[in-house]
Amino acid sequence: MSFFRALKRIVQGKPVFDANDDPINTHLQEQVDAQRQRQQQAMMEGKPYSMNGPQPQAQQQPGAPAKPAGPASTIQKGNDRTFPVVYIKRTNTRVNGNNMQVHCYIHNSWHGEVEVDKIRLLNTTREIDTYLRPNEQKEILVYNGPKMPHDHYHEAELDYRTRDRGDYFRAIHWIGYHPQADKTFIIDEFKLDHPIRDIYG
Image (tube, rainbow, N blue to C red):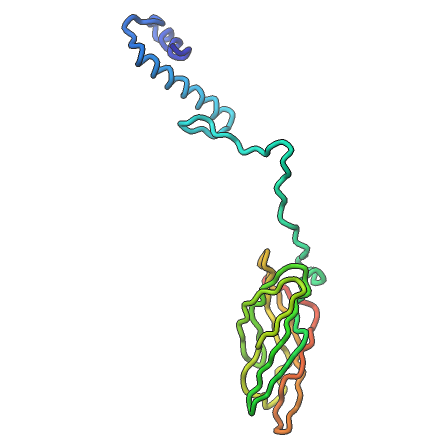
């Protein structure tokens, strides 16, 4: 018989042992009392408890290497010198009649992977949605349309984000044109305009 069951009988003024006790029921009751005691002890110690007993706490094995934390971000909000720089490194414009295709080599000069989101130029927006590894560059079609009758559009906006943390940035580029014999203009080059903008910061 459990201590708690015996104590309960003493408090009730009953004999501790009763000749009518069923040994099987007594044994089951003792198990219930013991389980209740373990549950109360676990609650007092702030440990999780289930019907199967106290749940083991996850512990690191002695001598096991600690799980490495993710690398700390080198980006400091408000400090554009720490922002990742992704920019148009080279331009190749192909003319076919009144149409021009502008291909750009977009370069990731940052130490982490980035996703190039979109580019805005000549009153158009083109989704790019491609990834660049550190120091990688890709040739990407950024414009496919008519040659320009003027050179009034001076800026292109290249939006991208860091893959690990999802921070968004914008690289502004000045557009350089080359005049044509038919008095139209084609894009000749892009020049990065520092600083890089933190667009969702």
